[in-house]
Image (cartoon, rainbow, N blue to C red; front, side, top):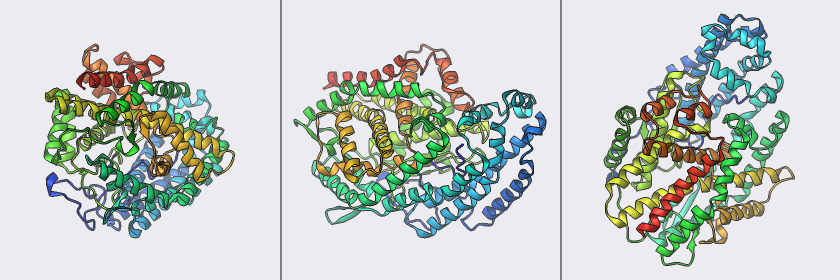
Length: 613
């Protein structure tokens, strides 16, 4: 039902070597910068034009099957699926190139035009294949079962299984094509406007004008005054764009409500749950477990942090502040690389070997530059190519953890690629498993090697804060989205109301240890996930809690051959659902105790901190 041939993911970026300036800081060592020559030579390259022509030719031939899927025998059915997969690979590669190229500098109008023109073309081409999945979903079960009997079709059984979950929510061919055709002038266009607006925003730090990413990074600076100035500046910059961001948010929420209504989804989150192949009650169990733990996790930790700072209350800009009396050490890139690869190798050499390829072949773009997308990501591209990783490396220990996180994604994407284009991708809820596990491996290796009390406390506190950001904060984001989408049904939300919801949710989740100044009410508007992928955010909490339970199994050595089973899980891609993937480890996400176990891991780290303190 989701026919987004440009393969959108939250927070993408890239560098294209021919015209992007370097953001290298010599203090960090030789930071790698990628190019896209493994995909195409240039936006106007002959190789890209050839692939567009090849896709057009294959799609013209593919259209001859329109209205005839029900009459295909099993062998022919398998061949048509294989042809569809090849077309998807070509379109996905083209779309990935356009998206990566544009998101390196979304303020560049030439890049924006190339991306938009490519998106329009891919939407047009993808629309011509739309009939295929719709016709499959109109087949009776008995008819479809017969078509799956030949080996050429049977290999695609997981894709057919997941495709069928959309049956009850699909519309007529004409309506499906209308939704697809209008996506480039509705949702995609509004998201692009948001991205371009955010990319050119500048925050005033003294006499310097910096990007939003750079200002946000200052919120982790050891200097309380620098954090305060950055926080206030971010608030001013966001406040100046509130009218636009409010309009975009209301428009996209209404756009989603219209489509959800046509597709008969019960709640705004339902389409995401269906796409994640996870049951509504499982997601609700996760949300409930996280919210029930607010006092025991976030409230308890931040009250402890306030005491360390000698304060009755923390200011909101102190949330990610480094602890007092800890060394503010910048970690050079070669050292960060060694930390992560050593941690991966300590788990299994195979995982380290795959991760090392990203460094050796420069599939990573690390420098922070104006215009470059904020945050970090690993873009899977397509199995016939390879993933690309983006980080904004500024030398902090959190940046090392981010590198470990994205390399986990990259390893997962490489291993799953063997399943082919239709089966390689995993639901968002499982897509975070390898990344969070990679973080945990790196953290545990660093903690085991650190014997100094203050530095050990800093490591533990950093890990707790990362987990709170991943679980508590993301569930709070989820609750913010739920309130916004529910209220949007009754009319537009004002800027004031959006701010009220944000402040209510933040106070509830972070607890009484914080002082929230008035400008913090605008901070909801820099969270790009709300627009890029509505209700994506709970996947982070899902992944973190899942990994907490998974790592506990590994650490206690309660399952033999864990490493082998773990790599098999990653290599399976989307072949299995979460029940089947977790079964070899004795875990079950439908059990409410599973999520409490995950939250208890965070509480356990806080217990350790109390002893260290």
